[in-house]
Image (tube, rainbow, N blue to C red; front, side, top):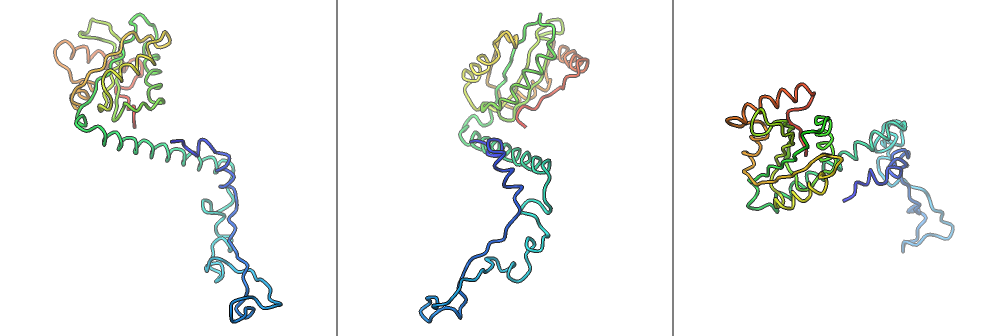
Amino acid sequence: MINPFETYPQTFAAILRKKHTCETIMLYADEDREPNGEPKLNARLQEHWVEEACAYGQCEYCHGWQYNEWFQEKPTDSEVQELILKQQIKVDLAKKVKRKKYNELINGADKNNGQLITLCIDKDYKQVPKLAEEIISVIIKADYDCLLDAQATIELYGKSETELLPHIHIVTKKLKPDGAVAQLFRRKFRKDKYQVYRVDVKTLPYESAEAYVMGEKEGAKLAATAKDKAYRLNNSLQDIYDLTA
């Protein structure tokens, strides 16, 4: 489904700039018609308003109170562009809502299940914070159809507070098999540009996977979680990124 406001912005701009013209129609007056309805020999067509409001002097367009259906006065170029942008956003949001309902409908028995997706980043890479945020930005822009109610977090430590293992955790409602999701992310991110060397996907109850991403862990991982939080704070990273808002 295309977004027409993105595909044809100039067409919509021309429509939005056009002043409303009230419709008229050419008709014969009743006195100029024969009993059978045909016009008399010297009858002449007369222009009539289509809308009663125009005929009775109640039309906001005829009086100049309204420029067209969208603007009260003649719009500036910036006002036209702003309205087109708003319409683009509305269409994008509607597409997301429609896709969400479709995915929930076909998801069936998996509707309460989630997936925990983990992207492991090379620990020797020097700009992990910047790279991790770039990866998250790419995921958000891609708008993957395997993600629903998805959130992500960036962590530096692995099973303990001494094990350096930079990675991104993503929680999502389960829409596709684990293997299909893993293959999608491997194809996209297992490249030198992203320094991702492993992608893991496993099915969990959504609430459990969400709690894990939020930092609800136990034992040695709990200490690592505290250091992860400090790491994010020191590097101006968000604790949680909303991927499918």
